[in-house]
Amino acid sequence: MRIDKMLANLGYGSRKDVKKLLKDGAVKVNDKLVKDAKEHVNPEQDTVTLNGDVIEYKEFIYLMMNKPPGVISATEDNYDQTVVDLLEMEDAVFAPFPVGRLDKDTEGLLLITNDGQLSHRLLSPKKHVPKTYFAVIDQEVTEEDVKAFKNGVVLDDGYETKPGELTILKSGLHSDIELTITEGKFHQVKRMFEAVGKKVIYLKRLSMGPLKLDESLELGEYRELTDDELQSLLEYEVK
Image (cartoon, rainbow, N blue to C red):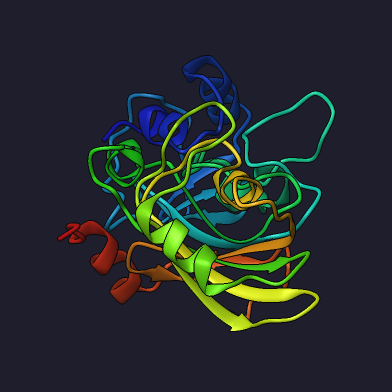
């Protein structure tokens, strides 16, 4: 692979930008200064450094974030901080994007990647990938609600949802629940509870398909997927 193509693929700028880096003597391959953009490198064998920092070449990046409230699930925004803004530069250069969206005030599991094929597969309405949420509801959730969700509820726009699996964890003045749905309509969890006359006051996503939130991650923290987590995602097929 040409050195300029490798650096451009990793997000270090356009081919023109990369040529300037080379011309300025910022790039070395195996401790040898390289200024020729046509120089070929083997990313798996050669050690490439930029301003003294080793560059790790990989085509795709897969990150699990515990999304904090107040941050939006987007790559850029004119007003609000985005989940991509929380990434270290060494990860941001891969130009990753969030797979699906969590509402601004919603916390929890968010997959961030630059693998468009995987993202499409996980988000495709035809795949019905299950997503599980923990929520606190403003009043008592009843067995009648469990039955209603199991049959599918009608949202404010007339859309009837697919069945959802509602589990009551704690019932009372405020109820703790878990809900698994296989769709991703706008504000769906909140609107499903509104359909039965209740309001979500706290919402956190726990899982998406086989991927479960690493509870050791503090809000706003993220890490790369383990090999096992990535393998389970790549091989995942909804039954």
